[in-house]
Length: 142
Image 1 (cartoon, rainbow, N blue to C red):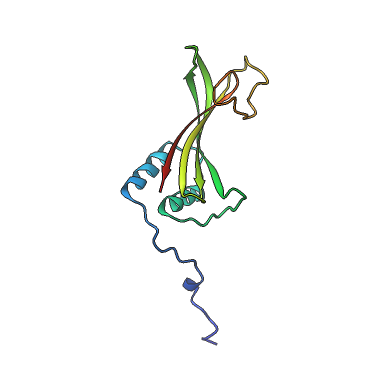
Image 2: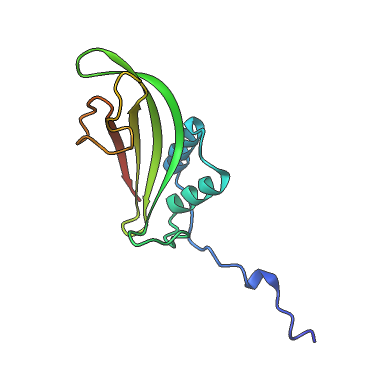
């Protein structure tokens, strides 16, 4: 009967060769310090990806995961010099095909003076026009 019992440690997947450089630890710390919408499991997923884990835990056709990190309301200066109240959403995009991760922000106008334009998330060519969505992004390859 003792031969039939297997140690449970053998059943857990082995994660060899995963480590974070000091630079990655610093970037992750800064990213999570500002994050107010990311869950603990998503933080673990992001850290695993940064450490080199390339097995996608949420498979999809693109083999890419986008996680919302944070959300704030900010007054953003517009091209015409005026300011508009915007919902600023911070995201991270993990590309399991290339090993690249990018952080980006979507800016959505909260002003009610413009109705029915672009608030559904459709981008206006990245111009940030009335009611549109503007994006800014950073990219890192590991």
